[in-house]
Image 1 (cartoon, rainbow, N blue to C red):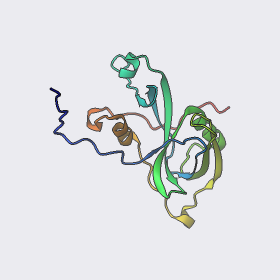
Image 2: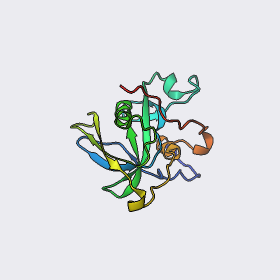
Image 3: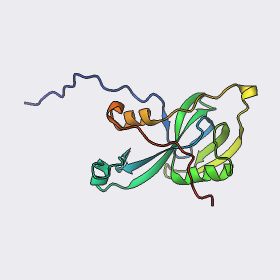
Image 4: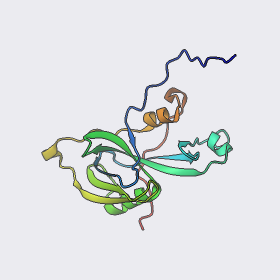
Length: 175
C-alpha cells in the first residue's frame, strides 16, 4: 500500500519577484534600480542551481562535489514588459557591465540593453543606452535584495537561513 504524501503546513508562496535569465536570442532593455550587484555563490546541479553555504562542511553542494559558480543579481525595471524583476548575470557579463561604467561604481539609473546570442549558453552582450532622468520620468523603485526570492526558488524557508551577507560594490579588476 502506498503512503499519501501529506504536508499540513502550506508551502511557501512563489517568488515575490521574477528572476530573469535570458534565453537564446533574448534581450531586455532595462533601468538598473540596484546600486551594485547582489552576488551569490551557487552550486550547479546539472539542470539548476542551488545555494552554497559558507559552512562548507555542512553545505550539501560541497559535500556532493558540485561545481561552484558566482551569480550576480540586479533589481531592474524592464522597459518593454513594464515590470520589475531580478536580472541574473554570470561573472563575465557582470565584469563587462562594470567595465562599461568604470570608474562609476553606482549602477543605479543606468539604462542598458542586454542581449544573448543564439543558444541559452551564448555570452551576454551589454550595451549602455543612457541614464534615467528622475526629473523627466519620475523616481526609480528602491533597490531590492533578491534573497527572499532566491530562498523560495531554492525551496528554503527564509526564516531558517542566516541571511546576513554583504552588498558591497564588487571589486572586479577592470581589464
